[in-house]
Image (cartoon, one colour):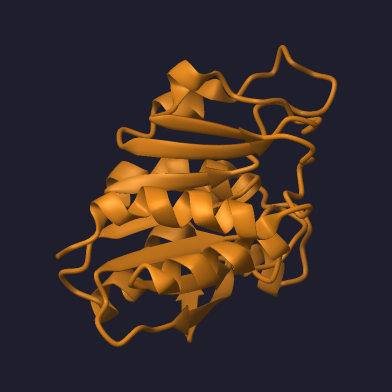
Length: 198
C-alpha cells in the first residue's frame, strides 16, 4: 500500500490475521528498513498474538534519504500514514512503535494518532558520546504507556526505567538488537497483549 504524504510516498506492508484483536504499526530507524531483524521478529510474534502488523517505510527512506530531516515534517507525514492505516482497520486498538528514530516518532505522535501504547526498540537516548543531549523528554511526553527494549551495549544509551511504563534491557545486545531478535519479539508480544480487544 502506498500513502502519499507532503514528503512523497510512504510504503506500508501489512500482515493480516484471521481474527484481529490489535493493530500494530512499526517503522524503521533513520538509515535502516522495515526488514531489520528485530522488526521482523516483533512482526512474527505479534501476528501470533492476534495483531494485524503494518510495517511503514517512511517517505524520506522511499526517497533514498538516510536522515529523516525535521521532526515536525517527519511527524506530519507519519500522522497522514497512520490515518490511512487506521481507516482500514476501524475499531482495532492501535499500538505503534519502531526502532531507534522510528521509536522517537512513535513517542512524539502517540497521542495525536490515538495510540493506546508505544513500543520503542533501541530508543536512542542520546547521540553516541553525547549524554548531555538527552531525548528522554520524548519518552516522558508520549502520553501513553511506552515499552522500551534496549541492549546493554547500546552506544546511544539506555533510558531510565522511570521514563517508561516498562524498560527491558537485554544483555549482550547493541543498538541493532540482532543477537537474539526472537527474544525481542517475545517481550513485545507479551506486552502488547494487554491492549488487544477480546
